Image 1 (spheres, rainbow, N blue to C red):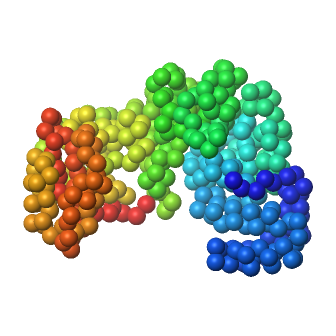
Image 2 (cartoon, helix red, strand yellow):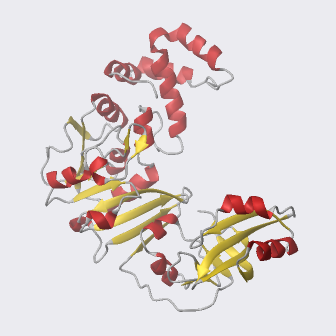
Image 3 (spheres, helix red, strand yellow):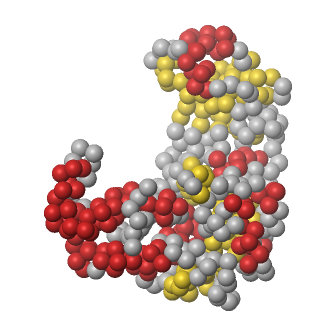
Length: 388
């Protein structure tokens, strides 16, 4: 558990003297190897401020890949839940020109993106320390201390990010979030609202009437966002937003065509991004790129080309799956390093890799799946697409 910051810490760290002290501490390695010597030196220079200074420097280093702003004040818990800058920026662009109230603003990760797109940005939180940090991090936002379940603004779009961890465990049930999702939706009934949530939430059971957006960044599904009907795209109930740190960005929605041909496996097999799979948009993704499915119930797609920015597996061999047959094919192809992808069959990839014991020089991949009722193995050569 990280250091517990106080309002006095925030005031001290926000001062010119605090900024100078942070810059000095940031010159230290602060690694396991140098920990005792570094902490001793900081304590000799700054006394009781040591813990706040060291924690802030370490958190800023962790935040570099996630948050755009340099010199942020933050807590460990707030950093873990903070929206990555690239994700927040995409959401903010959907709200361009609107007055927005982030009712769970924490240290200001969403506010920082919103102030670049929206004429009025308001943030509120119950935690006075995080609120003070947000004021330091995003001075252009208007901040107030308020309960997220008590409406305090009118004519604003509501943005909320209920806490998804309690007691160190990730929560997936809507009623276990903080504040509880059902209570939040009741408090702002009839208002335009966007709510961040866990990707694993059962959206069908929730009965959400608007749009559910699944967002991935660099191949990892980061979050879902519930958009109320007034903020949804025309005819859209599901959206997948696929982002890459290098500037790659694509969106797919269920308003797009999803008619696919039925054909044998093509030259390539593609495992669609997790946001596309979780949003139920595999067919829409395939239709846009001229691909088709290996099996209508399995999320792998296939075709004779690989979409830009996407990883593909070039098919070398197709066989009815058995461990013995697969071992023979892999040995014949001089397989060494082996990646195993599995969908639709009950196979543990790590256990199978150990059993196969391939010792060749070639790096290959195996896609194990079901085509119709037949367990099938595709031995492939994995290839990276264009950089994202």
